[in-house]
Length: 88
Ligand SMILES: [Zn+2]
Ligand SMILES: [Zn+2]
View 1 (tube, helix red, strand yellow):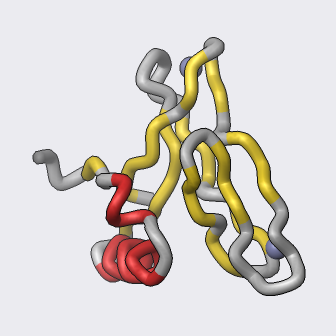
View 2 (cartoon, protein in one colour; view 1 turned 90 degrees about the vertical axis):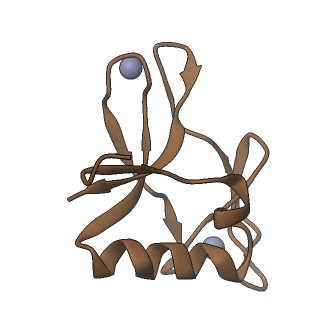
């Protein structure tokens, strides 16, 4: 594992773990993002209602009550980007 980049598991992105993962990342001056494995382009983690959206399969869902907005995971070069943690 490099000190510049960390893989995140799906379990790290569920419910309360998502916030913990994000807080941990920020403590190391890193941030949660999506990355294209083809060209290494990164995409900011989507926020909705000032909260990080939660990963559910191929979608990102806002868990704030009364919102429930859902957007697809960012794509690049026709491929789904992968969640990861990187130096900002
Ligand atoms: Zn790409
Ligand atoms: Zn929302």
